[in-house]
Image (cartoon, rainbow, N blue to C red; front, side, top):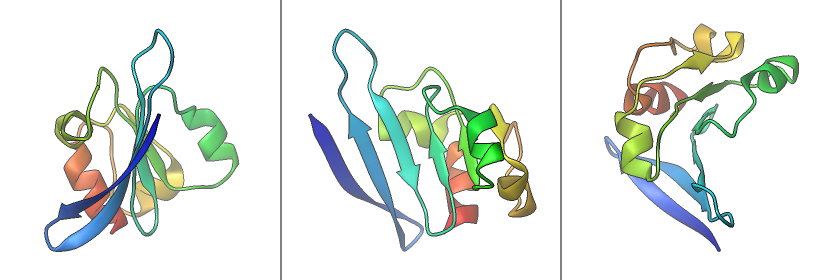
Length: 97
């Protein structure tokens, strides 16, 4: 099953994407206007090579988990927008909105 959910973050809207996978945690992605935060399924090295603004978190099973998790890695394009390892997912998404 694929779930697409609008997520209100400080009066702006991001899009949450949740993909249920067999015998696995879900694939989670929260997408802003200029970048995204995704779970550990996201390959940050590939995102860097593609020159996109992206960041990853790990150990998450819900959108709330993504928003409350600590950013593990961010592409240079995400870093240029103020996203850094160690910040909360919610703060990273706010930078992308």
